[in-house]
Length: 153
Image (cartoon, rainbow, N blue to C red):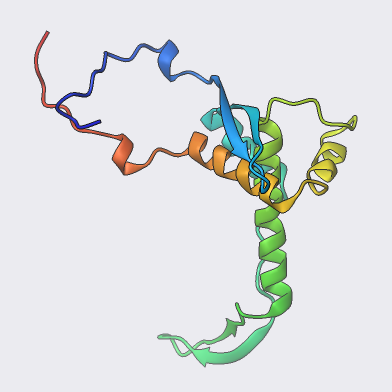
């Protein structure tokens, strides 16, 4: 729909609060599956980062160089396979925790850790689809935001 014909209304506080939405995910065989996903608040998003250990730090030194003060400083190897694996695992856990906290479903398990383990049993396409939905719910594309000239009341 073009901007000229696009209808809209002034947003209320309720419009911008956390809500649950229904989405479709198509399976590899073409079956359309419906999932309910809840938008996460900024506080909940920050809590995901706090719930996980800090991002790993590179520990392997690939060389040493002098800085502008003639101090010898280590140059860390950010291509080290162990470091890269640790970063990937941290990001994967962040993704899974966001999916878990957004997906409105009763997963098996008593604890959050047990429920996170259940997500590992999902098919790759399914977890990828759920993550894409979460990503859509936690960000807004530049195309979705339009400047509207002031029109008065």
